[in-house]
Image (cartoon, rainbow, N blue to C red):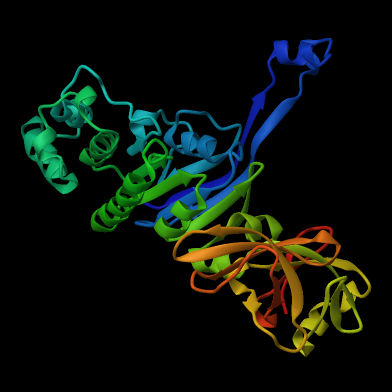
Amino acid sequence: MAQVVLQNVTKTFASSPQTAAHKGVKSPKTIASRPVLNRISLTIEDGEFMVLVGPSGCGKSTLLRLISGLEMLTAGDIWVGDRLVTRLPPKQRDIAMVFQSYALYPHLSVYNNLAFGLRRSRAVNKAQIPERVHSVAKMLQIEDLLTRLPKQLSGGQKQRVALGRAMARNPQVFLMDEPLSNLDAKLRTETRTQIVSLQRQLKTTTIYVTHDQTEAMTMGDRIAVMNQGEIQQIAPPLELYRQPANRFVAAFIGSPPMNFLPVTFKANQLVHPAFAIALSTEWQQALTRYSQQTLTLGIRPEHIEIGQKPGAIPATVTHLEALGSETFVIATLAEDQAIQIRVNADQPVAIGNILQISFPLPLIHLFDPVTELAIRP
């Protein structure tokens, strides 16, 4: 097991001559490079389960491939334990990777898929291979599948075999690139619980890539939220939820996403065409330099309160999504500003109803109009 340290990791892909010509670039010498990752610095502690999450194209899978050695860095360094592995080939990094596609050898049995890497490792005593394979199979509950071929397995079974092949090598680091995306919803939930349990049992440093923020929140010790090749925030799951560093993180973490409303800070209030919120002294001090400026107010659907009280805001229900245990309401404020509200399933709500809602001051978020960074009292 080992700590993984990334120092100013940068990756740039050059545009192809064909692409450049299509865009009207006359000479290949003028082809611009496209930065995919920009000076990423990140430390994953020994035994930690770190999740990289972000939208498609943000660079998270590329970062994983750089750590594994499947891609070469443009700049920066990568350390695994006390070894600088930046220029080492993949086989010398003592890292095992689980891919989105199961990448099993179709002509080999489950047993031979699990044993494949061990047989090619000089560090493994060949006499110990059967014991290690059966130990991993028992841990993953696939002992009765060892004689089957991959085509005879379900999607969940294939994924467990892929995990087992990585585990059998007993590497210093596990890398997992969206390993659950090919599974159905029920099996995905079961498998992610199993992966977390196995990681805690093995205590192997794990870096897990996903675009699913639910997976990230339920699996990671810490989460690194990425966007456009940069890390936006690194924090434990609840800290990301409660104290997002900027508007992007606030919108990405949480389901359904946070509501955003334009408000103006004046006369110690947040003023919107539909409401005015009186601020505490702490908030007033934090917003001193934003006087008369338009800010972005964020409030999560589950934090909006419903009920008649002083300062309540009328909201007209336009759409309902009943999920059984809860109901999501889409309502409009003044100037047709849409807002989403989560209510209890037993609360009677119908389209056309006018709800009286309020935003608890301790649960609102405010963001700078230019930088979109969070403003904190």
